[in-house]
Length: 640
Image (cartoon, rainbow, N blue to C red; front, top):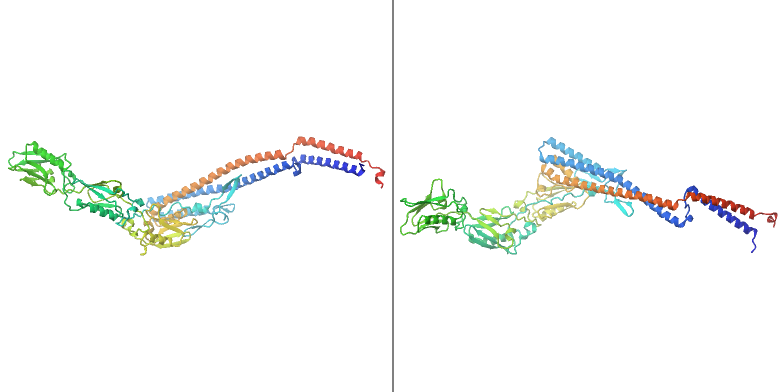
């Protein structure tokens, strides 16, 4: 193939240009210190470089996010600490006002102090950082809290601001004002006990706050200590309190001196001795029950037995006796010890006292009397007098004494009937639970309440509910009236089954329930107060103005719980700060490592580049010289 001059020129030109390009690229790398200045320099290295730079950019963004969030967390930490101190101060005022006596001037000064504290709470809640509201959710240009005379409303939203603080790790960088300031620290009425009274119609299943009564083996044993008789009473078929009363009284009729009734307060059943009943006695009758419960003198506890001639005269001691049987034994033994026969101590014909019988053909003419004017044993035993055949002792009027025990199962315990009863005595309280159909008249142990209006404030709305209306008869009626007031609340029977409770169904405004018209309805029903921290402080101000010490004391619990919530929120903020600090430490280490890796990929070896540059320079100069020699044009090159 013929090599033309043009081909030679093209080849030499290409080689020179290529040499110049390598020389220029090496010079660029040396001047920039970078091995890769264009993707074509190292395609694989470029891809690695882009990955590392993306990681480095993400690290920078995470660190920026942490810096921004740390600013918010610092503001939250300071604000929550100040709020806790404010509520602590408010509690000190509440305790002071509840426990001590202050004049009107002091109370007004205390009210003004709490008002100032409340204003500080609003200022902190409406605080901002860099022009952005701290507690408004996404509405960072809107103040979260708006206060009125009746309450406070939340104007923010429920937005949660998530910030990436590490690879695959986020943190919530904001606190929501609705969650913090309107969170329920208590439930109004949850601990109320309206003391539901029991009536004959009360179902046994409703006793013991709904746990009911176990009548599977529904018998009780009624022991008459005076008569030494035991009655077994079956109440297993009872459904209501009236059924229990009917069953007991029908089966205890033989006792004749004890009956059962529903206690007047409605809290329990009541054992009632029959007044004026003629009670017989036996050997087991305790001496302490005689003479209507005044008993028998047993110190010195001796009686004198003598005849008219004085040939018989001795004392019988009953000082150690506790029952009539022991008295009889002591006297009969004393007679025997004196060699006296045919004279015995038994019971009178009516069975209500003792009798001394002289069965000898010729009466011994005995007289029984007390040994002195100070001794009353013989008179107390009803046998003071002359024994002419039979000395009929008087009625000893034993006081009733019944011992109630289980006959099997736990019916006696569940019905509160167990124990020893001498007098009219109430059994154990049975705590009927509050039901929707419970008449309001059964509250307050069947005494009811003087019900009237209550005032319910929710945010900037107010409603008055009249619970004294004649159409409101049952608990269900009262609940319906409250639920129909037009506010976002729910009234219901509390979990314990002892009273009413009221809960807000929204969490963006305060709820305050107060007495109205100088009445005590809200207080009597146990629903007075506020379930949230802002409402509690507003109600404390009102309580101080009105010298309502009971309310001031009641609010102490809410203030305590508010401080607990603030401490919990502050602890959560602290935990986030710790987590961000740990992430920042990891990110700083990762940034250093990424920069190192980038250096390894991008940075050039300066020493090698200097050598390479010298080499490329020599090659370029050699290419120029070679081209000059290879291309030597003559006059013929310019001729056609």
